[in-house]
Length: 183
Image 1 (cartoon, rainbow, N blue to C red):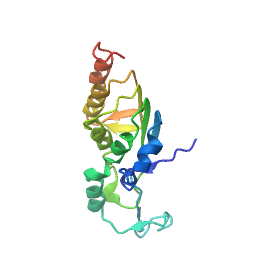
Image 2 (cartoon, rainbow, N blue to C red):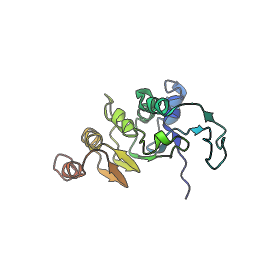
Image 3 (tube, rainbow, N blue to C red):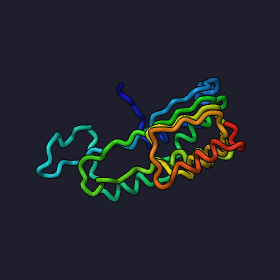
Image 4 (spheres, helix red, strand yellow):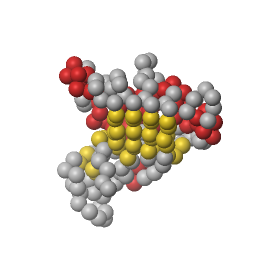
């Protein structure tokens, strides 16, 4: 099975304030979204194998520029804006797809801050309360999952595979099995 995803920064290109978008999405009750790291292609360093222009989108950015772009807050709030357009949302699945960054040795091991997407959604003042939430392929902070779960109070929470960075699953499981959660 192939998974396709929209790069995190591309969610911000959409004109979310358009009344047409409100009208088109108002009746939907389910949303499954795959979001990925932005895709970059770098010029080949002498001695590397492969095509120097394998994506047709070659950048001259340095590792520090890629890191700075990844940390920009406005690259993480697009999903929160999309979810607000689903007033009847009952079933939400969010999958994060990390795409390796070839080309710059300085970026080896760098993790894009995908956790910020859920963080922004959990901070919305008028947070929707879906009945079912599923999070897959996440590298996320335990506090973001816990805050989100406490605020939305879904009847069902499906997680995994998921890695917490930093954190532990115990506080999440403790909350989900508590009377307060009512799951």
